[in-house]
Structure formats: structure tokens, C-alpha cells
Length: 121
Image 1 (cartoon, rainbow, N blue to C red):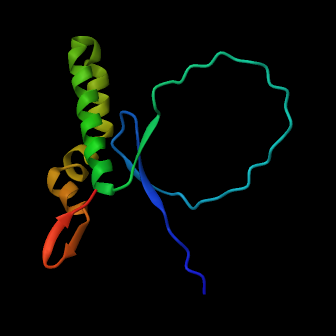
Image 2 (cartoon, rainbow, N blue to C red):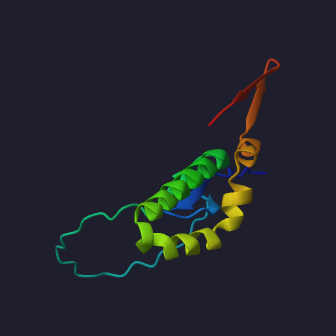
């Protein structure tokens, strides 16, 4: 029997607190159609999401991104107050339960070699 490798990464969208597990073995057929391309001036937007190899790192970065976004809304003053309330309302569960330091450290994988515990990222 063949052994199937399972590769995955964890996706965190920009200014979001949700961590999504993505399989990199999810291959789908793409239908290609011939097209006439014209040159277009294109600049890359800021990243829509970030990918991390471990769940713990993804959770840490989701928390850091959320705190950065909250601080930017606070810096806006009265103009960002409504947006801040909405952000806190929509991400309350992640900010108060899922992304707490104890849960992040619980998600860190531990490798035991010769009786020593070592964390790896």
C-alpha cells in the first residue's frame, strides 16, 4: 500500500483572528482557455493572508495582527470608535478564549529526545 504524505499549513487573513488549516495536497484540475493578453501595469496589493507551518505560530501572529489592528483603530480616535466596537464584537470569542497565551502554548508541538522536552516551530 502506498503511503500518502499529508502536508498542511495554517492560514490567517489580514486583520482577522480566525486560523484555518489548509491542506497543500488538495489538487484540483484547472481548465485553461486560450486568451489574448495585453500588457497591464500591475502592482501587488498588501497580502490578503499569511501562511504559517505550525498552529502555535499562526495563533501568535493572528493575535499580534488583531492587536495591531485594534491599536490602529484606537489611534483614529472618535472616527474609529464604531469600527473598534464592531471588530471587538465580531472577534470576541477568538480574542478572549482561542488566542489566550495558555491556549497558544498548549498548541505548540513538543518533541522529546533523550528525556528532554524541546519545542519546535
